[in-house]
Length: 292
Image (cartoon, rainbow, N blue to C red; front, top):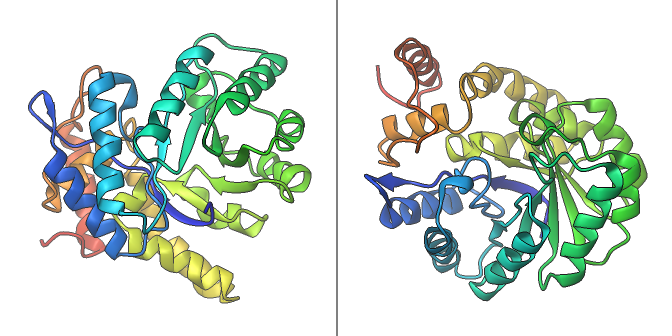
């Protein structure tokens, strides 16, 4: 279930409302282009700005379009263990196949606190869990030694590793790779993560270039490593451009320019600055994503 390319979905908006029609269109296109699963309600989905009803709406729409063909991994993590458990149970009720659970943010728990948090969620969860380590967002780093304690739990199946530290990713694979799947969480590090034993990626850029990122993985897993590296390097400037401002600002701008009508980001995020719009457009044109 947890190997391959998993687009981290944007949440389309039309004014103040979730645009379900735009979400369903995007999801269907991503499925057609080879996505192995769908990840709504993560960082890219602006989950902290969504109401409970909107979260339900997003998960239900993804489950409907997926139709059992591929898993929906719903973001359910918060900085409150009880709320995380409640959201995880709700995601199961809506038909999600797994839950993405971020490290608690703002609270700054110790490694022992992280361990107890994830164990409590796993003990209560009806779903397998993909843990989500992204220190740049949470101010805490889920260390490999702590993951080694966690990965024995039958409900803890994978880790989205977005520490940006290849040494840490390597140690995680070494300690935990036989018990859980390691997924790249930084789009520019997908190929390096595969090279040290990762099995896929949860990727915001996969909303924009799913077929190309899937091809990188195909090359790598079929032994065409030089081809994988060449394609990675060709895509690398675009991958960096898609994160020129806080995710998902540039990803949404790119999707809008590609005709997906995903709308603006919600406050406190702001639309892409004009100077960065020009650079993004130029890079998208270079890759044939939009016409000149």
